[in-house]
Image (tube, rainbow over all chains, first blue to last red; front, side, top):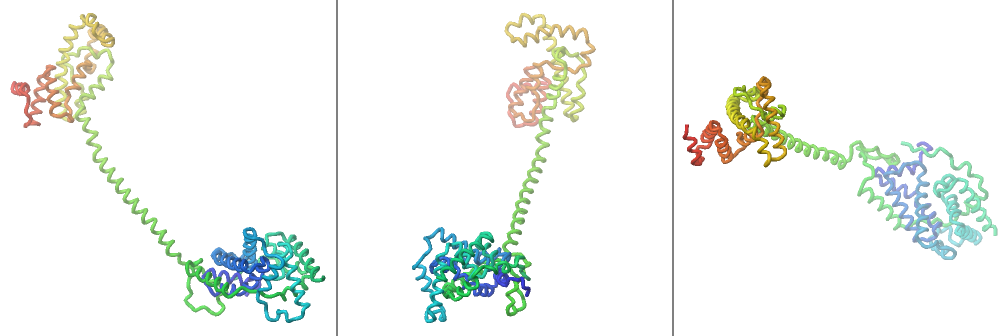
Length: 184
Length: 302
């Protein structure tokens, strides 16, 4: 297969032609990263479930007119980001502070990440998580897309609708703030 | 089939963000949260239902079984068109063809009926009123002054009338014209006697009639001085005579009662020969019609 081929786009095209197995494979590849992006952005499990389901519903309904002009993951995150912004505008403000910490703490964690490890590592992860939550929305979204999805500046710009330099500036400010919190 | 990505390589210029590697390593240690099984089932069920209810893209099913992993390549687009669209495309012209055929038949039948009816309706007035219109035309084309002039006693009938009519009609019209000429002679005699009295009779008449009567002596003098002109002119009956002719002219649309009235009028005007001929023709055409006693007496009289 050609290196320039996006396998996710091929899966999406196959699903558009009626191949349900292609969608199942596509869903398995992106379900975790999409869910984490939404959960750490909205910090509300219920709203995360709603947005997650709505995002995939949009993908399903748009299968006939899907054109692989960009990476599938970029398109998927763009849908999720737009839905998230609409949800923020419609609904109550996001949970913050202790409420968000409780929401994130209630999510099941892998066994190796349970707090039976060293306290310093646990505290560092918790500090990072809280620092991410306290970032401004644009910076938090950029950081999540960068660290979780490993997107490039251009891809983050495409998802968020901002310019490349704007994204780069947001990332610089956000990472500086995160490093300051972790060094305290 | 291959899907090209955007031309730029996104990762190269982004490597220099300060502290990113350390943050990324720590971030990967955060809990890897995932959606629940119920949420997965909901999404997958929605995807399956979307394919069952309405296929987004029509596909041509392959005959050979799919190889493992072959779902990466999309299936070719179906060549055959979708049935509903094709049937709708075919039904519309069929319906239009039927409607247009019916409309064309109705139009053709209407035109045929119209063309079949039109010669009768147009020829009937020509046949019945052929004498009167030609005379009226001759009267209008003739100069005004000679109108009341006396016609010569033996003036040939207008050729145009005889030429325009069939033989029986022409013979009949000749007879009518001859009768009218005779009546014109009597009227001329009357006018010649009345001309000197015209100024005295003006009192009870309208101004137009007075002007007409006043012009008659001068016209009579002009006619006397130019007899050759009179002989070359078509006899133009007087307005009164023309009106009487139109009143007594034979018309195919007349009812028997109207025809009898015209015959009475002819007898009253002194056209006994024509009246008897028309009475005989009426008797022949309507043998059951009971004639009034005075007309029966006229019919018996030779």
